Amino acid sequence: MLDIENSIITLDAMGCQKEIAKQIIDQKADYILALKGNHSGMRKELKAWWHKLQREGFTEENYDEYTQTDSGHGRIETRTCRQVLINKKWLDKKYQWTGLNSIIEVKSDVHEKSSGKETTETRWYISSLRLDAEQSQYAVRNHWQVESMHWMLDMTFREDESRIRKGRGALAFNVMRKIAMG
Image: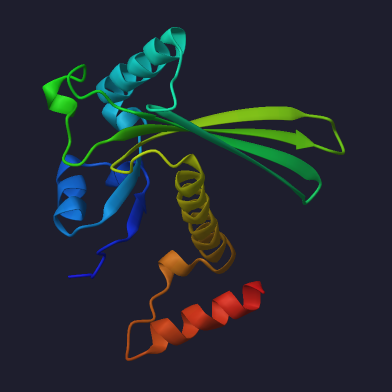
């Protein structure tokens, strides 16, 4: 068993499971779980709640927002993290997961400098965290940096297909691949 106490556990949509959320809370940690098509009913209901609050007007007690802009690799990316507390009285009982406190929307606007092309991507998360959009954005961003590195390892070095299993060989080759990535 991992010691995750006082940590924020981030998982992609595959890890967005009621039992996983419960285990994280039981171990005195927090979670941010990606909400996609695997929970379409829950996503639809939470987005409806979000839009209801938006129409009524967010308040300091139930809403936080943090925006960050980065420039590099020929593009400018602005990420806006908006987080709202959930009113559990409004939420259908089947969606009341252990520890669930907030919905997080992360919107990424990307401007490609060379082509002028603009793209927008919006991702949704559920979380046990209270309001702190800056902390939530930091956790989500770190998660995707790790995902990106794993994708590079698999695409470049086909790491998932590696048959190295003896002794510490797998670890040694993993370290060498990361060094080769720079």
